[in-house]
Image (cartoon, rainbow, N blue to C red; front, side, top):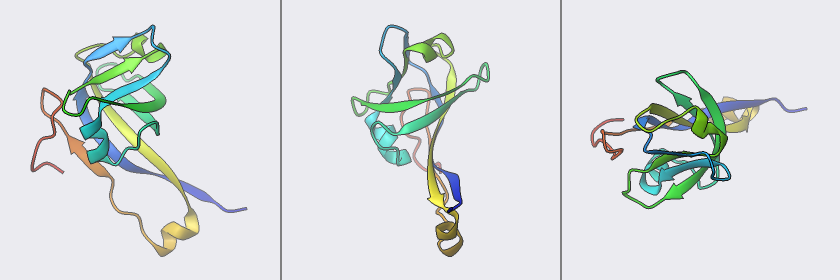
Length: 124
């Protein structure tokens, strides 16, 4: 049996929730530019942490219109994440431990945003 290690590969830091749609099937809809900058693939499993209330949710990321600033929680998480909340979106991937020992991973891509969910240039 091969041991695996799960590491953070990308992060959107302190984005502002722009919508919460409880009637949608599920997921988080995020500006495609933010997903790309953080190295998050469309439909990849992500973890979302609410800075306001500590709620944590796992779902998949759906790309929104590039440059829209959209960060919308859909389905059940809409009960725990409301417009105006600050969130951290984390992308995780699992690797064989032996691979990480031979080839240490790069640090996660961290995307910091402004109050319009646009990438802050010059921030890590």
